[in-house]
Length: 362
Image (cartoon, rainbow, N blue to C red; front, side, top):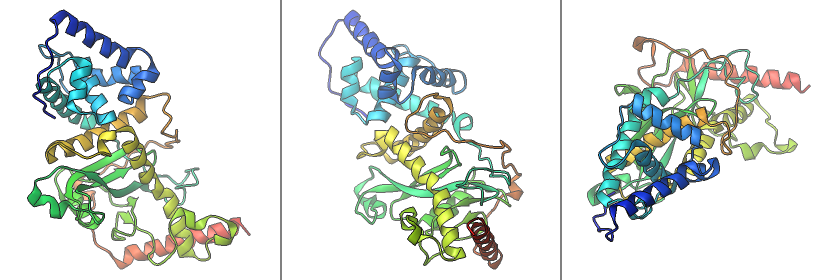
């Protein structure tokens, strides 16, 4: 994010007044304008700055204070604007904009423990129709493609089936659509199952306590901790619309309920990319910076969901019992392996769900 083009000479006092006006208009004029500029209302913006100062150790530099650098950073994420746009709006040099973007980016990543969500398992007394059938369900996972900028020699492995140069990002969210784990950096050609195995094995990777599980699509193995749908059966929600398309057996009913519950990760990705345009456009950043940016966007997504009292792109859902799924490392699932026991458990669950549905609709 570097642009060395020199700005026209402007007296220092004039530049300072222009910056103050740009910052005031972007952040303090109204919650509406603040949300349009940064995706946060004024209160949430203040909370973020407080966390960055007091938890992440971010401090003002000699020329830019914390609030201004955070405002510039969020505006870039929200609108995917070029360096020169921020130069013009804040009357800053390209080097200043680029340097402070990276300073704030690293500070946001230091808020990981503060902002990453701890999953809450679904309990037996859950009343939400989407996941009441899935006791001990933690959430859902899936991959998504986000464009990246890589050297020419690496492009073949980063090329997706659609021909885009992208990283295959593994995202895991809870029932509220907050991210509990994000892994970016894998090549666009990499298989989803391979990325999941890496996430389980790596240090500080995805933790899945034994006895709990995430929902995943058929691109992943149906293995302990990861409940996949039945292959060869109808699955997508639109296939069940209308009385004539009602499930006719246990596997179909299971797939219908699975699709409804797993849809939370699709909605989470939709909200994430809708908020942060930098995840939708062509990337001009080095791969490492883009991967850091992806994780930062997920953390800020969680902050917005947590703090904003009005948010038109996120539903307010009941979290239920806030008993977190916690274990020691030895109690976490260490590898992914399809077993007869896990397949039989899925069959029993599907049969129980279908029988209960038939009884209620008799």
